[in-house]
Amino acid sequence: MRKLFLTILGILTVQAVLAQTDESQKYMRGSLCMMMVEHPTLEYNKDIEQVFEKMDIPERFNSHDLGVRIIRFANDKDQQANITIFAKDNQLGKKFVSKWFGRNKKTGAFKIDLVKERGNYNATKADVENALRQHRGLSILEDAGENLIGHTYWVVNDVKYVNQGNFFKGMKDATNLAMSGVQAASTKGKSLEKAFDNKAAEAFDFLDDIKGFRVKITSYLFRLKWNEDIQNIFYSNYYTDEPENEPDKVKGFVNDKDLFSLEYVGSVTNTSSKTSLSGVTSNEAMIRKVCTRAFDKNIADLQHEFADFRIKALLVSTEPLKAYVGMKEDITESSRYEVLETEIDERGVTKYKRVGVIKPIPGKIWDNRYMASEEGSSESKLDATYFEKVSGGEFYSGYLIREIK
Image 1 (cartoon, rainbow, N blue to C red):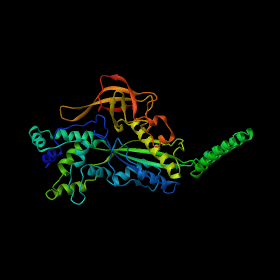
Image 2 (cartoon, rainbow, N blue to C red):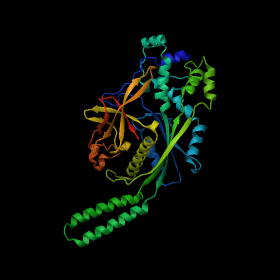
Image 3 (spheres, helix red, strand yellow):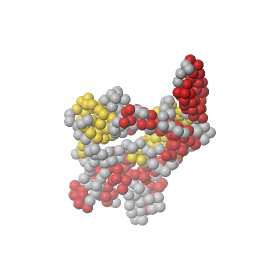
Image 4 (cartoon, helix red, strand yellow):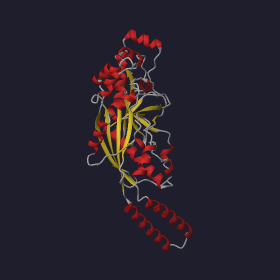
């Protein structure tokens, strides 16, 4: 059975196909599941929850969503412990593995469609026959485990509304006082002053309505434990595409509550910064803007802090050097990125070799944050972030870049 699995999985010609100028072409990416801890007793909890449920997984990850996005705990004294217990009690590690291998809940059968899709493995009859002669199955298995399954992440966001009402009330009072002074000091341009005063009052009344909306988010990062020992047990003892002939494997997978688990990596905490009202026409729009930017900031900080979680992006052009990353990923003038060439080692496993280092060009960092264009940001008009070479030889479109801390 294992030989059959290895044959089907692709034992094929492995190609991590990289885009030349189109990011829609695939390369091996991490897989991400995101959830949020709700606080029903806190103001705006329902609004935040509705925004989160509509959010997409960051585009440089594959979505590994399990169908549940909102979770709740009886108390929040130790959220890391709460989340760890939740993952164990609900066997999330096993659920992630089941999703990877398309497990049929009714029959217990597995399939490898998602592994093939995300790894961009291409199988033909000739490939399979050639693989059998060359015994290349294990290398493809290692490739999928090291570059795909082993990079499955779970981020849990603990979101709380922060009341800044008094701060914004003070701003409104100061604005009204200042406008009164301007009107008293001048008898000219009264219509313009009145229009400006009304506009300011309208804006700050809007802020009063949502009490200076801010959120504090702590994001907890977990990773699926997947190594050679775990994968060997899974493929030997549990994997089956013929459940009617191998009921012991089906039963064994269901009963194993220990093999598949998640390991805690770390956390980051941020409070959302002041958000421009440009483009915002309602309380709901303001909440969406604040929360979206705050979530993006935490994902970026997790990538800064934890090397294994750092995304790779395609170098889509070499003259000039540019990539589709920007302020949403927290790129600054001091950021540095390594340029990676994809190689296949002697075992047939995909590896990444550094061939140089690049840095962003000042004034050429793309503002790809949510609603940046509505704010009139000049950098939002860029089509990407532009880089200059720090070191290395000749680069080619389709190389990958990854942040260096």
